[in-house]
Image (cartoon, rainbow, N blue to C red; front, side):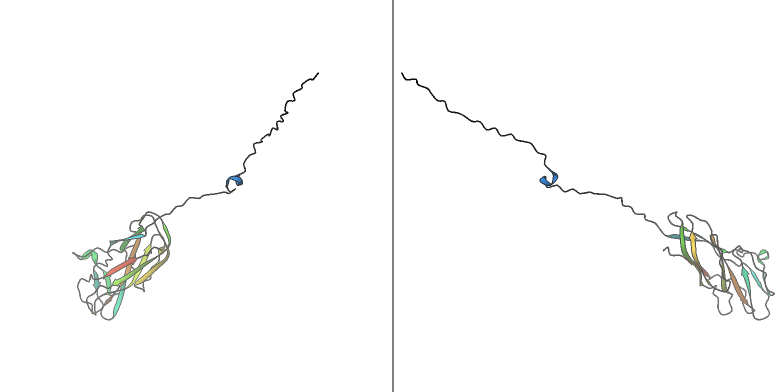
Length: 202
């Protein structure tokens, strides 16, 4: 008696488990860096503005000199120093003459911001004119509101160093002067003088 036995094939299954691993930055081409930032700005300023307001006017001076020369000085506040013998101010008794006054200037910042450490130069750039015996301005006497009296009666050029230029001002620079008259100076009006004030912002 035969018994037929069928053998079934054995199937072996092999399972593979996959594990998801995180990707590092280096793996995707990124660098581990840092960054920072700051702002940027600029301030634009303007310079100095100088305005001539009043002329320097000695008015009528009586020449009573017999010989030689003498000087008479007008202060920055518009008053005369004691006059020497032979010269005197007679403006109050002479009609048609200019009033006695010191020169005035307004020196201020062009952009309404105070400037410090500046230089202001005041100079007689042309004399009164009129020939060899004409009166002559031989010195300037200067007062500046931000520096006091800084004048020099013996010089026709005065420099104010380390000056403060205010944000705004009116007639803050006053200029008097010394007038030299000769016994030979003829009567007349002498008005060719020029006073120049300069300052370069730096």
